[in-house]
Image (tube, rainbow, N blue to C red):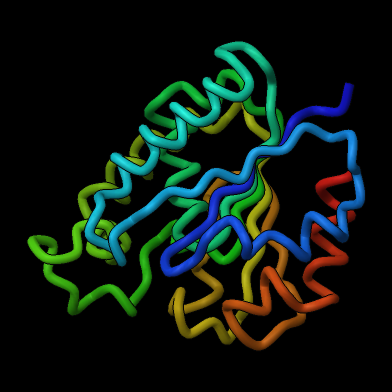
Length: 195
């Protein structure tokens, strides 16, 4: 059986953002989960969204099934929390972080935590990101791959949208959204997901 794939969307997105990628993967028999994680436009803290992700994964695949995980944008940080803090790394073979502010984004700097906790979690050197970076060894069992766009204005600077662990690939696109929508990006992601 093909390993199940879990897709985690980002801020201002829904699971529909993965429609083109799923078509490009073209594995109709592959078990798939792309849960909707309502974030209240950035109000919900990312750890809470990771707990909700955990509930969805357990409901769909139980507690033991090994999965692959792909997170786009904020979804990559949610996925990383699940891997590192909720024992997801114990059951994950591969983690694909696509345009995710794993080291924060300058776009979140001016956002007050009391109003938009989820967005504030993505500030450079936020408490959350500092804690995740101190525990980066928790990702050791997982094959991690980071994808970024140099000119990304959502995750700024774009070349810092990578994990310290695993491979780092610059995709030949110009914008954040093209990382998950442009044919060249989709081709590369589908190829790596299928491997």
